[in-house]
Amino acid sequence: MELESKSTSKQSKKQSSVWSHPHSQSFDRLLDDKKDYREFFCGYGAAFINICITFPINKVMFRQMVYGIKTNSALDQMRKEGLYQLYRGLLPPLLQKTLSVSLMFGTFSQFQNLLDTHFNLFTSHPNLKLTVSALLAGCTEAVLTPFERVQTLLQDPKYNHQFHNTFHAFKELRKFGIKEYYRGLTPILIRNGPSNVLFFSFRGRVKDVLPSYDVWWSEVVTNFISGALIGALISTLFYPVNVIKTKVQTQTGGSQFLSISSAIKLVYEERQRSITKIYYGVHLNFTRSFISWGVINASYEMLRKLMYC
Image (cartoon, rainbow, N blue to C red; front, side):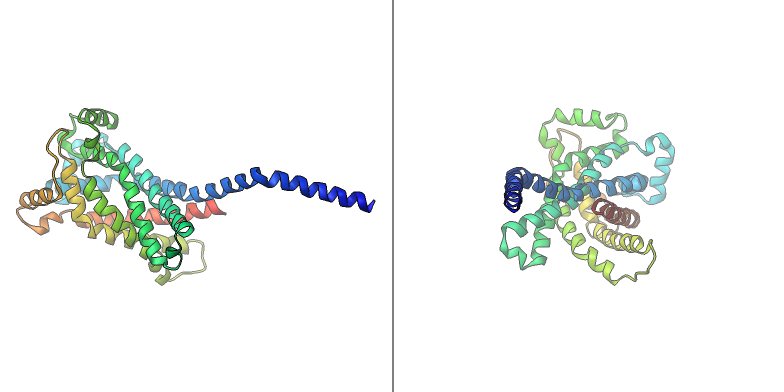
């Protein structure tokens, strides 16, 4: 009996070893990969919640960027256009921002794991790993430039009758070649990389200095405040870059491409050589970014808890 039990145990061990290689190991790796992709899902969900809340505020700010007008004038324009036009252009930012934030959080996590796995230098230098991962994530986000391009055209009232909707705008731009979709790529790259570095560097640090309480909503509030403060400050810092980007992307298809230096000179002249006028809309931008990044950060952390529980 003892011999039989020993032989049976040996056979079972042998069978388990056969089944564990290679199929179960590859399955385990697949599960591990799925865990990594949770970051993408959390970022996507957080951005979706945010866009539905902040789109009208963003539209007012856009008018101020393009025309250098005050808040009341922008609101008057939108009031005259009516409720139907209020959410015109929603689809491009819904597509672009959800994918962008998904890529921001997801690729940041992926690049960190990649650098940890293949480069020993980054294991002993976490700040360098964070910086490089954030920059690479920002560059990856730039593949979504066509959505920003179309969103810009649809939000500009002078194109209300030229472009009927998102799909029509994409179709019209296609006539001028693929490069037309990527008009404004350079200022987007200048904005994305450094802003990602700042966001991921200070997000946790700000949260750590905020007071916390033993109630369920305490962490939600601290996540909102930390994301809101950092997002608003970063957005304000890069506001002139967004003004330049908007100027470049409101050019019609087929027109001459503006370089960064030409766009800066053009905006400066159009605003009567006034730095103050370049910052028209910055207070609303601060408010929108405060709400937007607060919602994104708090939603992301809540979704992350659900995904990893």
